[in-house]
Amino acid sequence: MLQANPVSAWKVFKQIIQRDIRVASRQRSDLLNPLIFLLIVVTLFPLGVGPGPDILGRIAPGVIWVSALLSSMLGLERLFRDDFRDGALEQMLLLPVPVEISVFAKIVVHWLLTAVPVLVITPLLALLMNLPIQAWGVLWLTLLLGTPVLSAAGAIGVALTVSLNKGGALLSLLLLPLLIPLLIFATAAVEAAVVGVSPAGPLALIGAFMVLSITLAPFAVKAGLRVSVN
Amino acid sequence: MWRWLHPYAKPEATFALNQKLIPWFAIPGLVLVIVSFVWGLAFAPPDYQQGESYRIIFVHVPSAMWAMGFYVGMAIAGVIALVWQIRTAELAILAIAPVGAVLTFISLFTGAIWGQPMWGTWWVWDARLTAQLILLFLYLGVMALYVAFEDERAGAKAASILAIVGVINIPIIHYSVYWWNTLHQKSTVTRAITRLEAPSIAPEMLWPLLVSILAMLLVCAALVLMRLNNEILRREIHRPWALQHLGISFATTDGEQSGKQENKKDQKGGADAV
Image 1: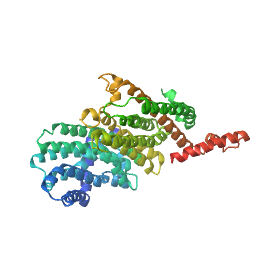
Image 2: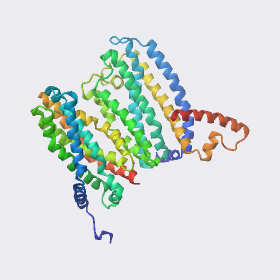
Image 3: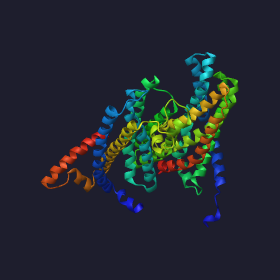
Image 4: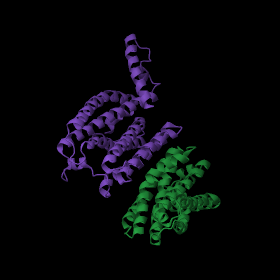
């Protein structure tokens, strides 16, 4: 009798993705604000350090990556917070499919909604920061490979802090240290491309981070959610 | 192993074991600290390149080493706390984290002091230094997360998960000096002990260094156990055995006196822990 209406994992995966995209499309400002924040932070740097093209080009990879990191922190809480408040998260944990599947779907949606817009405006950021053109492709690649790490590691942090009232600052404190290696390799890759050396090494490491984080993070997220939802 | 470990899920048993173990760690630890410092600072020969200033190694290397070691210990306590839901393992995280954070800070601080005459700078953004700094942030994150929850056990579980996730950083710190060509020198102790490569340190320097590493471990282990006992006492203060230990029970006159002394000792320790 219990088997009468089996729930397939793939179906749940698709449903969660569809639902979350629909929810997000009804609160567009949540999606746009981190992006505008990213643009404004990148704009601040030329004003702060002076608009000399050589300085800007040299600090461009770091500035763009740090800004991307900070703006991803901004929208991260949205990953589980609303679902936690209205009880949907509890229902998700009770679904008869592995929680990791639902968590992975959440991470995928977060990546689609926050990282893809960043990838789209990356050329604009590179232009603003006067990054040498031969490094644009590598910058884009580091963001493509690195942003899934942000979403996956971010999900762990949010899962741990979602039940706290003022989790925002704590979230950054927990996550940013874990993301420092990513930042180091990403900027190393772009700088290698700027000076004309092969960026393959750092890029391969970022790829390894990505594979590691998207395969292992769902398990840690599940444990974190179990603590938070209780 | 479970049968052997099982009695220590009871805080009372762990407390009693710790009480017995603390002198065994603290006394040899303090003796060895004195031995290694006198040996290292006064008797070991000066370095042919660095002169006398290399002697800070007898603080720097042990603290850096055990900063990582205690982090792994904390993560193991986290695994035990999550898998077997043992309360004392949760308290162990709380006991280890500040000790580890202080060790990490000492290693960074002595490293800066050492770097100033040797590299001509207090700080460089090199892989080893940065990774150690991340370790400090991880310790701080674990402590902050632990106390952020209203429900203490939820906080302990969250901190356990974070500690386990942060273990990724440990191999990065250890191998950072091999993976990247950095200003920081490669590990002399590992090379000397494993004998895979020719040891790059003279035996007259290596021995006091090894003694200082052991001393640091013993002293810090004693500190962790003392902190753990304080935490256990604080949680179990309403239980008869804890009251009896503190001498607050309806004991006989001489029992009360010895109890009062214990009480004073624990209050002092408690103040340190806060």
